Image 1 (cartoon, rainbow, N blue to C red):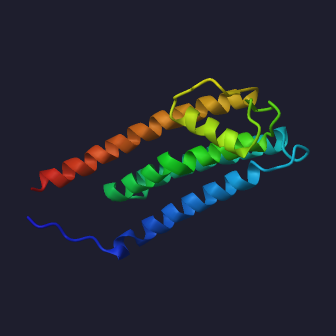
Image 2 (cartoon, rainbow, N blue to C red; image 1 turned 45 degrees about the vertical axis):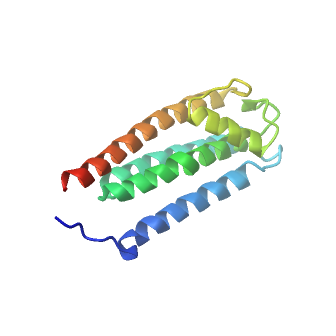
Length: 167
């Protein structure tokens, strides 16, 4: 049984979504992690935390209900796993400010991005650690990493199994 070749037209909306995710997450991290100490703080940090949680729930809903192709789901989850979620969490950490307000030991945007990746992958080196409300955020990020990795592996196995069951 021959499989129908895929076309760029089939992937266009998924590739646009991937590009949008990458651009939005980078811009959010770049902008929010560079707030001045007088601007950053609890109000902006709390607002960005709420927006991040809404975004995570909406993206999970979108992947599970609107994206029908397992290959498209796999690409979207892979990009989210590699770049989008850690950048968005780093943006939230940065929106609280530095000088040990959120991530103890972080001196700038690159430090919160590093902390975000270490937390998301649950490596936890311990050289930087969260404080205050950011402790809860770090837990949420670690759980998101577990869940997203599980969904990613399930999607990859599903794509692999479908490809081999047709032969």
